[in-house]
Length: 115
DNA sequence: AATCTGACTCGAT
DNA sequence: CATCGAGCCAGAT
Image (cartoon, rainbow, N blue to C red; front, side):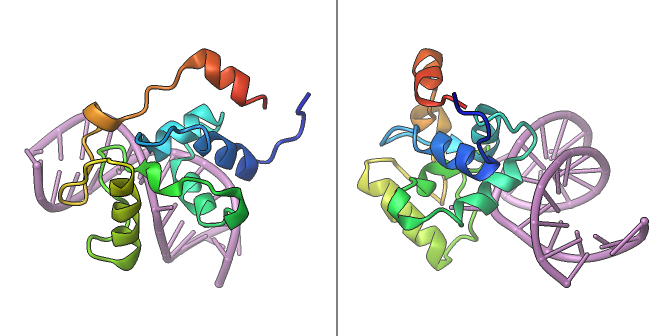
């Protein structure tokens, strides 16, 4: 099976599983990717994802639902727009996790993430 | 090897 | 709620 999967790839593949219209936190992605405690690494790595991979980086937020980029920055605005395009409500640079937070289905995960 | 830096997190205030 | 501080961890200096 998949023996030697890089942290980078694991992270991208995990984020790829977050469905449209839902969001997840950096820490959550790190955990699911089998990299507990490495939330910061998730952010770093998302910026390195090849465009052709179409990783939905904008669906990843801080643990409190806020957009990680400084409010008003171009990046933050881009992210807000991408989210709104899929009907995720963003108010004051924040998304209500109770409403849009992703609850991964374990069976599906095991299927899609054969690390 | 020591220090700094971040698309982070969590608990206390 | 909003802020703060300390903890965290891999990479870069």
